[in-house]
Length: 344
Ligand SMILES: [Fe+2]
Ligand SMILES: [Fe+2]
Image (cartoon, rainbow, N blue to C red; front, top):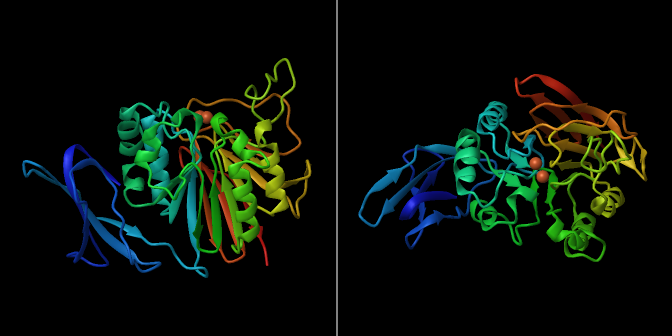
């Protein structure tokens, strides 16, 4: 994806070495450019450069950048997690830099990528400019948050598999499932709904060793006031619209669920049937620390909470065969949580 201020045609040169011999081009002038590079070798490093030309012949050429195609089933791989960047480019830049320093194979975003999906300046300036180094070299897979407002910008700035508001992708020995849990799609995530039924089938058919789901809203949360004000009343400790999804994850032995929306960090114990189940439970991780104003936890611990922290942060996971290592780092790059999961 590339964007220019004026209508232009766009060429992407690419190859495994420089000077680059291959290229693809758009056929008519536009301000938004989406080009597909096909027949790439898996697990291979590529160079690429984007050059755009306006009708009056002015050329804008980007620097030579890099990407790596997805690794194979038996390779080791890694990914980073960020959420709720909202509108805080100073913090987003700091977190994106730390993510980039770990050289993840790709990144996922738990939604609320901007504060106002309709505001172009936030996409261009607060999100993409702040995270440029990471986003120009590392694929980013988002899920849509409430602050995107289901605006066309979300679908314009991200090239996602259809129908875009939900999708799945394979990477290494894992499969990822991205859902839209916004109010507009509340019916879609209940049994009989489009996303729910798709996910039920997709999880049942998945041959991947690791199954990871991500969406914006939490099935479980120890937050202070999003699900009942804990200073004077009970909390439902999560979004009840997602209760059925939570059960579906248990039915299909999903390993990890990532969400944002709550501007905090929380990792649950593995849960199953409303109880901690260290052997067969599903781990839920709230990672909403990419820049949005920090929230707080309720005053008393919940039954599912393993770790929690109020700070800007990101997560980093590395996977090799049946071993998954999870780490969470704060905005100064300090490790504050980790755990591992092994399977045969
Ligand atoms: Fe948010
Ligand atoms: Fe949100």
